[in-house]
Image 1 (cartoon, helix red, strand yellow):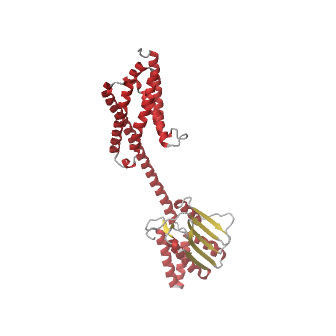
Image 2 (tube, rainbow, N blue to C red):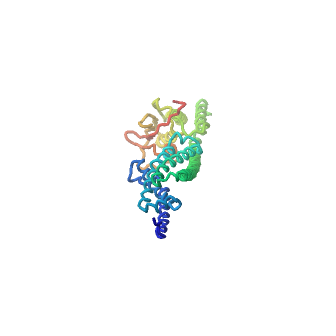
Image 3 (tube, one colour):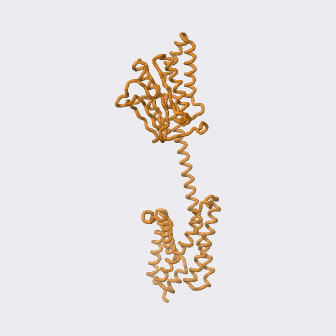
Length: 387
């Protein structure tokens, strides 16, 4: 039988180059092939693998003496049919067992070397097991078995090494990516901590100035009240120092510190200030930002008692409000304006909630049915030692 002409060889080499480029492109986009058209993952991956194997096997055909043997003996039709069948067999009986090994969760727990050695062993065994019957069927000569076995081992080892290199590069990329993500996460943590520390450290200097003046006056007229106010002020500043370096406090701790603040103001203004604090026992050990309540209470004193000079009633209430907490600070001072222009204290409340409960809170300024600030925190964080 006459061998292929020069034109046919040129056509073959050109086709092989095109198939090689197509195979490499499809391999690079393997996970995305047919994703929008075939929902079944097994069918989708097998079809993609079959097309890639077919392209690569055709691209490698000039290196195979068997391909030219079939071409010379049976012609183009049988040779191309043989390529289609061998690629399909390689997909069903080589790709699938290797894929099962690669994706096995238990085997993934092994070291990189062990996992890849097992993958390589399966690749060699399945390649030999598929190529021997295919070669007998296509060539019909048992004498080629030694060549088939050695060639199968060579192809399997080469494929396994390529897979190992690609897998190692993927692991390295993931490790470097995770490392960068960890560094970014640490930087974000440090930034958040610095911002929160800045917010915690800024107690209103006017409050401190007025409290110290009141203590100075009381030390002359009423030593017991001066002592009580000094202890309360010390407690408030001890809380602000944050020795434990926590960004959160329990609801109970926040309510206690708000009461300390109100005690100081009540000593200063005597009978012009009354307050009450209510909370459901079940919420006492949930966590909220440190110094969340004090700016709101200070705002109520400032715009109530100080602005009107009349008796001011302040109520603080914390209760369970599915799916989280409701924190309510009410007073009988002047109504909120239509346009709220928050000062530093109220702005710090928003800043803390933005940092610690992003997209998990809402703040309402209400004048009806009562004047109050309501904070809804939609995420519950337990103080485990307290629970």
